Length: 166
Image (cartoon, rainbow, N blue to C red; front, top):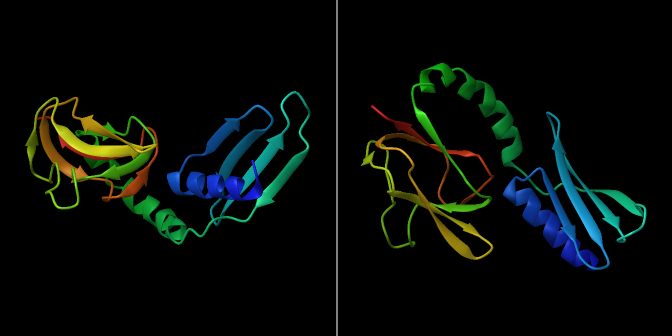
């Protein structure tokens, strides 16, 4: 694995929002960890020949993340309505990937705010490794809020929709 492959992997991990990714091949083991404090995210790459002690551990410059400060300032604003949202069911992402709210660019979105859904309805698709996975509702109710923008990366267990079951 050359340096360009490692850099591309780091960019992919940074965009996906994953906190840690491990990759092991016959001759190399790579662990990429993204940690964050209040101001910046740093990615660490650890490259270990299989069966040996760590030989390289280097900090890598963080990928450009203009949305990071906005996310940090948005967190306190979303904490206040949390008590209000407790009566709603949160539908979360079962996988890491890119969320699409439409089946194709020229089609309408699967679900909109205010729409009544039933168990088994397709809410969105998540692309992971060039496979499109339909995300179906496990509950019936009314869509109260869409928490993720179209064509944005999502993490495992990230909230996607709020549903009012009543």
